[in-house]
Length: 116
Length: 110
Image (cartoon, rainbow over all chains, first blue to last red; front, top):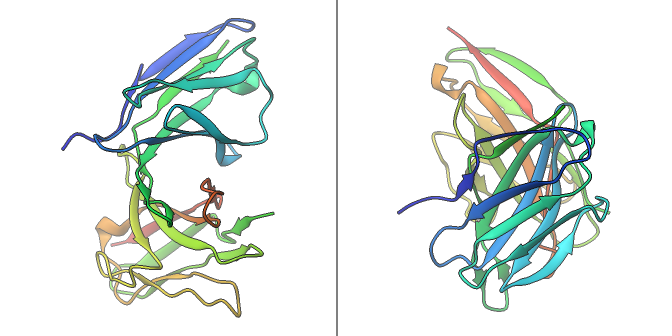
């Protein structure tokens, strides 16, 4: 079974530009999560989508946004890029256990975003 | 607020010696605790979760609610255990995000 996939592997942008990162979840998973892994800051929760809706977001400015498509794949958009947005962006997916919440999150390989 | 603390950034252990990676958490409800591992050039992967109460690759972790800890242990370290280890917490139903610790880099000395 294919795992979580992310594209592109690497992305280089300049300050002020926009970046779009993509994620395809494991088949059967309806929830997608985005995390930022910046140097020295560890893994920080960005966004959670389930069934096409944004369910939760972390402490990030509104220029970090995204969406989830009917096939459950997801995009993360970062507008007005700043140098400190340089990081590894990880996507994870899981399925919902009825009345219990989401199951284990499985991670993709990440997209390395570099802002120059 | 939920918080996970891994006090050791780096830990070196001789092959065959016991390993203990510390994790303490702060959460007002009943959390679910996980250990994730990232081997060199591989993606982050689940090692174990407290509700499974199983041993994976010889590692075990017991949730101690009194001490709010979820330490990861292995009696005899192997060279292939060298990796980055992250402790993570998930809150109650509806608060599904994972809060990660800053990670511990474990190096097994041959």
